[in-house]
Length: 130
Image (tube, rainbow, N blue to C red; front, side):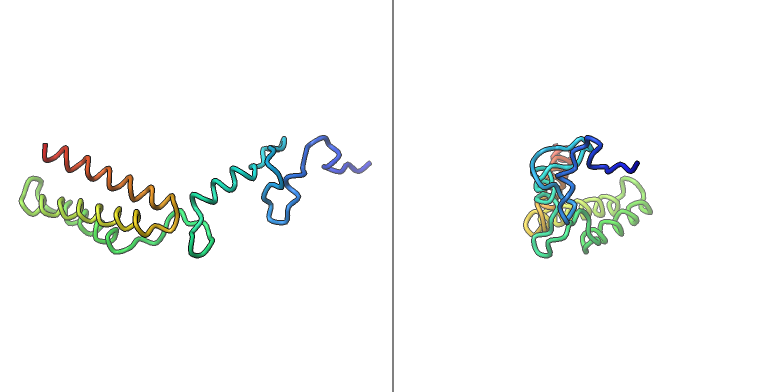
């Protein structure tokens, strides 16, 4: 006797869409994602220009410069003027990157990430100056 998975008592109706996305707002017994949670996830991570999901991107110039600065700072003596200057340059680059993401981020996730980096740097600077 052949058993059809649809007759097993599991509700599969929200897995029947061609895209694999749920067809309604109910959660089936298999734990499929609901339409509203799928839309929420897409809203946070969808690139507004391409329609593709963008969580991370190839680093842009501030991130490359932060990496180079971080390596240079490792080579410098702690407490030296050059060490401190490079540290402040790295903070400035983090603020630049955060502002760029906040203003030009391709989705809300990237904008939130930019705002978080700005907050992190402001708190760090206030802690150093105070």
